[in-house]
Every structure is written in C-alpha cells, then in structure tokens.
Image 1 (spheres, rainbow, N blue to C red):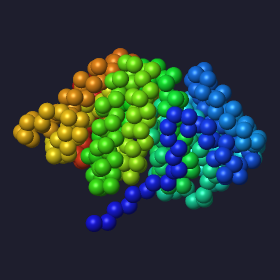
Image 2: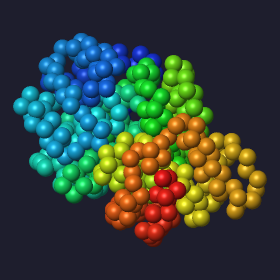
Image 3: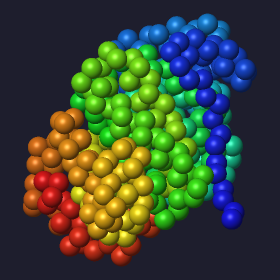
Image 4: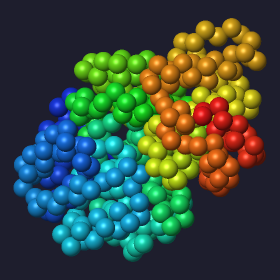
Length: 381
C-alpha cells in the first residue's frame, strides 16, 4: 500500500488562541502585513480584536475589508494591487472561506504573475508564497488548513478551484470564541458544509485509509454537535467541537477531494450567488441517496459513525445516512432551492453546467447524466 497525505499548517487550537498572533507574526519576520476580512467580521467586533493583536507585533498594517461571498477574480486582482503597493510580506486572513480563499489567491499574485485565473487546476502555482496566518470565524469550509482556493470566474460564469500545496496557510489560529457571534442560519449552513466535506471525502474514489479516518471522525463530531451549536449558539463546548470537527474533516477532504454535491453547489453559487454551505446542504441528502447505489458499504460505515440503527440489510441500510441528512437539514432550517429563489426553468441550464464540473471525477458514482442531475435538483426544489 502506498498513499500520500499532505498536512502543512501549524495549528493553535482553543479558546484564547488568538493571543498567540503577535508572536507568530514576529516568528516570520513580517514587516508589512495585510489583514483581510469582510464587513460581517467587522460588525461582530472580531476584526478589531485581531487588529489589536497584530499591532502588538509592531508591523505596518494594511486592511482589506471588501471581501464578498464567493470572491471573484476581479476582487482578487483589486486586493493584490493594494498589497503590492504596500509591499506586503505576510497576510492575516480573518473570517470564513471567502476571506481565507481571497487571502490565499492574493498571496499567489505576490510572487507569481497575474491574472489569477491561469492557476486554475492542480499544481499550477510555480513560486513559493508569503506566510499566511488564517483565523477562521466559522466552522465550515476548512479553508484554513486546505490547499484549495475557490473563486468565481465572472466571464465564464463558473466557480473554479486552484489546488496547490503552496497555498496552504502557514499558521492557523482556531479560536472557537470567534464563532460565537455567528447567527443560527450561518452556523447551520457552514456546519452542513463541513458535514458535506466529511461525507463526500469518505466516499470519494480518491479516499485512502489515511483520509477515511479523518472523514469518519470529523462527521461523528460534527453531527453530534451541530444541532446544539445552531439552536444554542452560546454553548461554547458545542462551538469548540464544531471547530475541531471542521479541522479534522479538512485533513481528510483536502487529500481525498469531493464530488457531485460540490459540483452542483459550485454551479448554484456561480449563477445565483448562493452561499456555498447552504447550496451544499440543500442537495446533500439527495446526492447521497443517488450515490448509495455505488458505495453501499461505505454508506453503512457513515451511518454507524453517527449511531444510526443499522439492521444488517444492506439494501435498506445504505439509505440510512440520506434519510438522517434529510431530517437534519429540516431541523436546521436549511432552505430548499425554491426558497432560495431558484426556478425550475433554471434546471436545464444548471444541469448542463454541473456536468462540466471537474469534481465529478472524484464522485463514487461515475458517468452522471443530465437527467440524473435534473432528478436531484427536483428533489431539492
């Protein structure tokens, strides 16, 4: 047996971990730091706390606070111009996947020529990048520890990924205190994003024993804590466990890759701007129902991991996970496609674009047809 399992980031985990930020910055010898976040992080008072810590490192600070959900190539280029003008030599990214992905992409352009779109695919970044410290404020994307950047190409109207080991954050500060201001809807959507990562990476045709352990353990932690985190956001034990599950799951999916759920979610986000986690959550149960035919034993493994009542009848047990996910998304208030403004008249266009998604190559059930995607969209409607 021969496997590759890539892990890079140095992680500070736990309540109060943000206090380690000044010494981490100093350890890299940074002089000009760009701090990247969105307006939601600012409104929650998190950016102010982080900036206070950055100032203790005695560095020049440039702030980019224009991050938007599903960041575009244009936004990356805009931030990169500002970073170059300020002679930035290190980054601190604060927020969810959008802020951290934007920071990763801007970092690429500090040492590699633009435009950013040319680096789509796997292993196309040639030159090493600057230190990046990622501080997640959600427990969902795992962007803080992955080698992936997801961006919107507004010209091609698609969401694409850059995958390269050089992109991974140098350091991670995973402080669950920074997640407690998330409203229930965001906690639900980002938590379901993490659960999607756990499930899809476990059944991926690129999975190995090294990734499978992380995927199963991550799912177990996330599933057992997401309801409490959503319905009682002040429960810091649940918040901490969600962040832990997100990190563990990230180790799995960044090595095993993802599948059809993400193919559909990428397309929904590209065309309609749907939040990534919500898009994943909406279709997840129905894609798992679809995939159960091709990997029934693995579906039972996932069911056992969250203590579902397995009967021993494989034909029935392979659907336990999908049924549990239907109940979970309903309990968490995940919106249907129609509730998110998607019309049935959009399905044909969406289904055609889903089939172009590279992640379908990692899905356990291959040769997905347009009709099958349409059927999933109708169920999620």
